[in-house]
Length: 88
Image 1 (cartoon, rainbow, N blue to C red):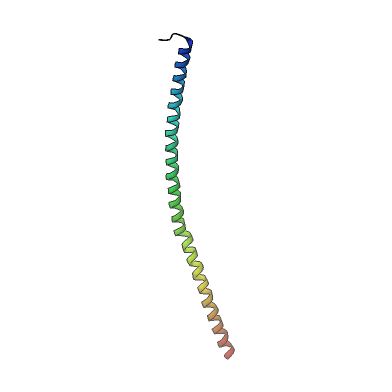
Image 2: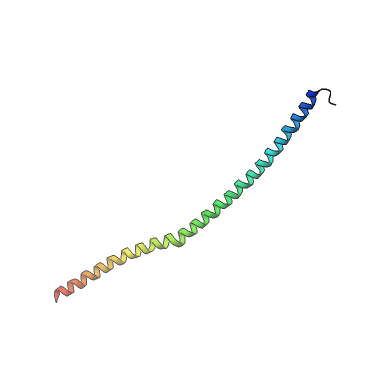
């Protein structure tokens, strides 16, 4: 089977390359799993960010709008009260 030392070298090189191929295949397999998990985590973070936006930012924008309208109404009422006090 092995006639020269070159045959042994070729066999050891083939086994080495085979082991490297198996190792790289396993590494690729785990890398795919890690990337899939990262994708799931990013989807979950996006969902949480959207919920936070809907629960915190949107009501804050509504309150800002509401306060701006209330400011206009209070200015109108103050002007009317000032006009009434001047008439007396």
